[in-house]
Length: 227
Image (cartoon, helix red, strand yellow):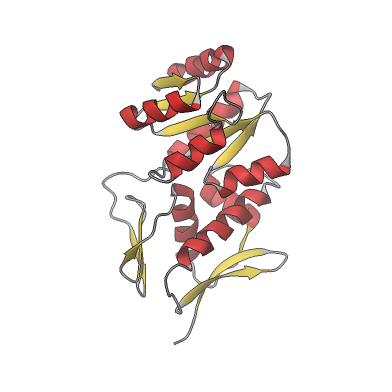
């Protein structure tokens, strides 16, 4: 497996997380600044990134934006600010999840394991086709009307989960469990932000044969539309 990249300007946090990652058989790379993080990312193609928001120079949000423009690698944001606005912004620009300081290393490792467990096997051949919508989960490739969509890993998994059961209503808790891969009760902002971003990307191309519908007070469903 490719290494995990930990980006934080706190040397103690880097050392603790690196030790835990290596103890579980992983390989860890570290960076202290946003600029250094981008350099390591380009060179190493990490399997997952733990990214602190508060960094000297380029902050973690800008790092996330730049990586998201070229890659769907899972990004877990680390923040010391327990404010909805910060967390929503991180999710809106493509972060898969966030971890609030102070945290326990055990919790961080549980989040990492949950994400990595959900990575599709490289030799799988699982493709879902609905009309001109095609989702190949192993390669995270989504085509709509002959156009390749630039979706993140989480957006692709979310679309696949909804589209694989047309008409079924998924509660936000259902989606947190099925897509995020662990129980995170009450983290509905993550679901809503990803749905909003997914809809925007789908709406860039005509798709009059389906919609992602909101079921008010409950959740979301993939709805087939009659021609």
